[in-house]
Length: 470
Ligand SMILES: Nc1nc2c(ncn2[C@@H]2O[C@H](COP(=O)(O)OP(=O)(O)OP(=O)(O)O)[C@@H](O)[C@H]2O)c(=O)[nH]1
Ligand SMILES: [Mg+2]
Image (cartoon, rainbow, N blue to C red; front, side, top):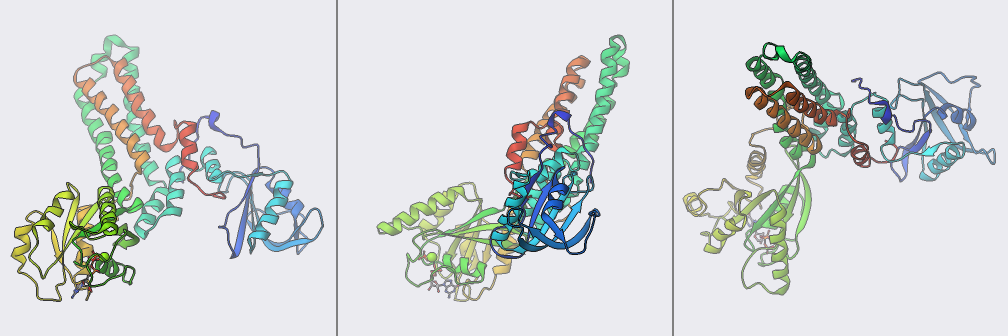
């Protein structure tokens, strides 16, 4: 874990001791309550009656006993309790965790006792925020904690774990050191204006900046796109004429009979959305009403919805019935997908189909796959084609260990823009004080990512995404 320390003005109100239920609501095997702050141990000492008489709690050791109601003197629950002495804790403060039975009523009763003894109810993400403010983790690691909790696929989890281990922070710190050594040279040039020509070797500085700063920044920005795919997922819409097998395709991909399938054209009226994991990509898949002219009223409403969903989708699966020659109206469907990435899905290959040249002539530019939604033939190929369409690759490449999120990417782009202005300025032999301003701006944007210069309101936005107790 890295060790960054923020400006002391950000040290927050760490005088208070916070407490929260850390496990989700609803019955469970065990429930956990967490306390952090200077009062954690005194509160535990008051509430907890250990089975074997212990005078002191040894740090990081589990104790068995009972939580006692301070008003009635009755035992609330049989628990395991642990005291963890600062700084080797999640928040770097004294931390207590109480494991009780996973009844929400018991958890609430114990929490109430803790609050009565002077702790404050923790805000969402406040434990992690303290870990950050106390310098145990940087902001990229704090964000990784949310991502880890929210990741939908193993690949998303892998990205979050890598970031939690501090890989992104490490790369950023290396870039930061390079920028700081440039700033030092520029500052010497400012202090000795008569010698600045000798001090600033523009071509050498440009080359170093390109190598040590621009290159790594660009690499990170490029991999952010991949992060969006595997972290947030994408949406894929199935469109086509009535009865071509859209709902059958949805069912085949889900491997369950989710949507109603009948031989009657116009079966699906509303849009149906389901979640899928395609080779590690979280995909929201949308089945729609078949698009045709002269539809009756309800069906027409479905078609309007289908078009609206189409506008929001990331990729399109345009499906046709392989036994038929594509109709003119079907070819026009491709036009309404405008510039979206589109895959042509030729269905019903278990029946006698048209020659493949018929389809390539009708849809010359679109990649296509042949499937049978009925027998599931070609579904694997379809998944591969979708993956390829989205990522431009044939399989997940775990080589990308650092995948910035949207917030981080925006700051990386601002950093890069400032560095490019420095390079331009060096080329034009601008005075060193102007170069210094741009270098500082690059450093500030970089600091926004790791948390050194992030403003309070941005921090609040980040930690608000957490759940209580984390
Ligand atoms: N033989 C064969 N029949 C299929 C295949 N896929 C779908 N069908 C049949 O085609 C008919 C229409 O299938 P659906 O999945 O309801 O088609 P749809 O495109 O959702 O139709 P609408 O909702 O009406 O627009 C049904 O009778 C399916 O059994 C396939 O791969 N092979
Ligand atoms: Mg349907």
